Picture 1 (tube, rainbow, N blue to C red):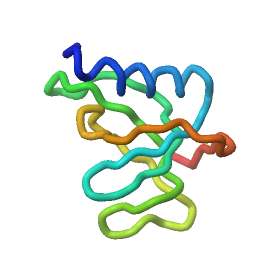
Picture 2 (cartoon, helix red, strand yellow):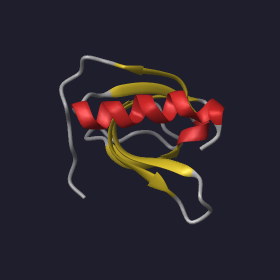
Picture 3 (cartoon, rainbow, N blue to C red):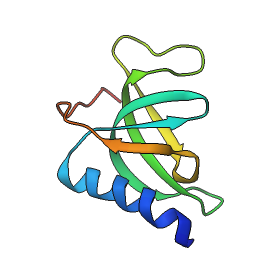
Picture 4 (cartoon, rainbow, N blue to C red):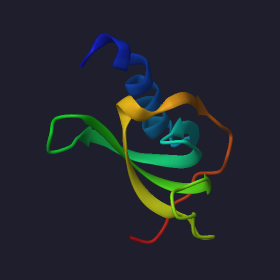
Length: 90
């Protein structure tokens, strides 16, 4: 893991362990989400699977939210919030 990635990775990992929701800036949108798993994609990049329930999304976000996969390196301004834990149908 690259040193500059340690803080975002650890924030997301701790949010998963604590079942806490988070918000972050990702690909030109504020995303509000519940991170579920963290791992690597086929290229070896750190990624987080999350249920996004608020904020923006290219093409719009459905009223019920949606499952997303975010590259950890693309998440900026990450903060854990006090929203209730949510999950969506897969």
